[in-house]
Length: 594
Image (cartoon, rainbow, N blue to C red; front, side, top):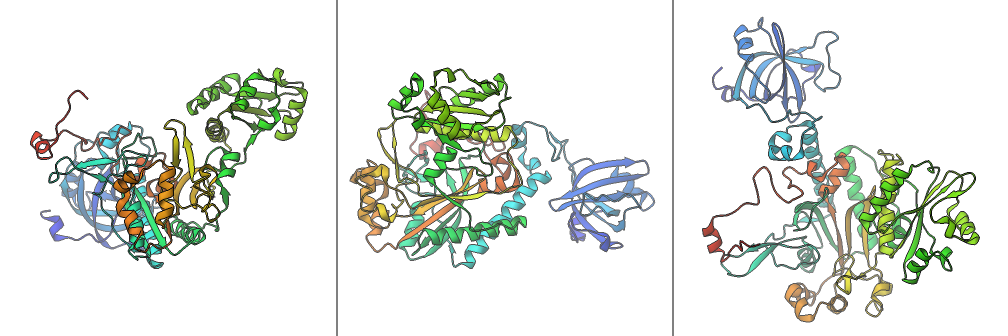
């Protein structure tokens, strides 16, 4: 067989041959997927990233080739040459694009044998994720992982083509930049040539994309790598990717319309799906009031009801104490689910404590009575008002949480999601996009005892709050917007502040002194003094977007080489110790006590 790869060029992939190719002599390259020895004839499923082709080793074609093929094992990589033939009557595999044909092999060469893999390269895999991550190059051979990365590529290309077609420029921004921590921790990079000083890896290109607007670039985008040193969960990674976008001389309506076109294009070109626009909009206040969360899943009803006013004069001490401390009471009516068991209710009670709730009160509306540990404390008037407000009927189950507004909304909002999943209220085929708009500019953080920006400190107030936000910061609404899909935020942005005096007022409200502002953001503030246009933008989380589009359960399944939840790479064993001489060059010393 000799130098097979030097003698032959690949004519087809393993995913494209059909009955139209019958009789052709073809050359394929790939991996042995499975081998089936049926006595005299041997069948091999031959795989590359495009698909699978069944190849056949028959001693009647070449006995030597057939004998050598007996040594083939899973994951051997090789080249084959043979003739395309239709499969015998009744033997077609309708699940495969190539299922109507097979290739009768005349010649082959093993380029590389393979050790017995630690797990089979199958979609239906039941092994620990740590093992998959350690042998990620094998995991990526699985068709489902292949499809995820192909989808990611298609989405990125659709975004690039759409934005380029609307006069956006793809411009790279620095990885090594200044540390301006706002929320998550920065990843720091020590400078060898500037002892004791550090670069930071960017949490986002925010400042630079605003500088590009000051530079007159007008429309910018970047499929940008971002870095945050934060505690992780299933949908977080220390390094992640954004479709980052900024535009000049626009308002919020311009951005939302442009981005709806982008989303429609990504779905159409990557999945062949048609989306209806414009997407519905709800205000932040409406989202929190009815769904408890600022990223509401609106595929199902199950809305929260604020019942604080019903208990304004209550004798029930628990509710009365909450109201006296400016807290609220909300209810969630689970229609027709009074048959939930006590153990199930106890499980849900334990669940809401994760979000700060001290308990979960309930009422079961039974034919003869309301069954509940708390209903005996309610007056007849309160019960009547509850009946009317919640539209109570026999068979309903009502949950209550009374606490600070954030605790009530977080716990009931998450409970709403859990109940929808538990009770099968979600149609997985439905795509429900919604814009959440009119975010507050600021919120008050009780832990640090100061105002913080709900989005980021460069977000502009809505026009009607421009003159009053400094005097009443918690009443001010921002020109900010998030795009939510099925309860997950997939993109967020805002119209930016482009005037130095407005930016200075925002920093003052946030407790950022002039010296600190100059130290952290001086280069941006100075740029504003040289003619900054009105501008705004948005960033889509590409990883989360692909996770939702592919139906993957974890964000790690749509990233080629992700980190674990402990921010380690099991494949490369990073992070790792470095040579002591490197530390000396960087003027660093490891504190062994830490």
